[in-house]
Image (cartoon, rainbow, N blue to C red):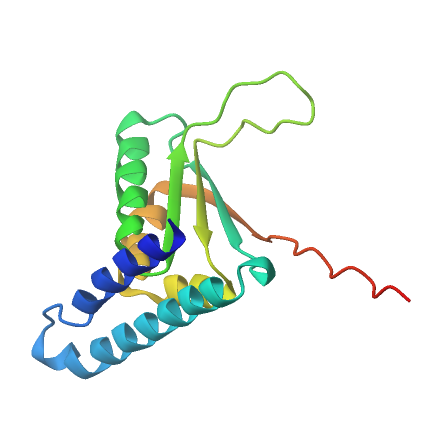
Length: 165
């Protein structure tokens, strides 16, 4: 199953660098695509070679809207966030509204929450610099959000058992 997922992602990546760009942007964009492709291939290769030593990253983003509860803004953010699945290195995207709660430890005051999975920190960094993400932040998230809070969580990797004597 894991090998099949790797092969599918690699096949998708082969088309990434072939995207069309404006003549003036061609060099800079092709370099960004190449670096993104390299980071994703490295991440996937390491995960296949060393699955037990693999520590994934969960990227959590909470947004409070300038106009709280605005259905059009929520839909636009949800739609834009789902498009992040197209970015190389993004393993999963979950986006939605908070679950209302009266429990004191639960903060359900935000309007939209987003959780994304990456293979490692290099994949997260490539995503953050990817033109599609940069454009979404600039044109959708910042204009609609009064506050954006981000949490990046690295999965703990089990330590090897101590050597027996």
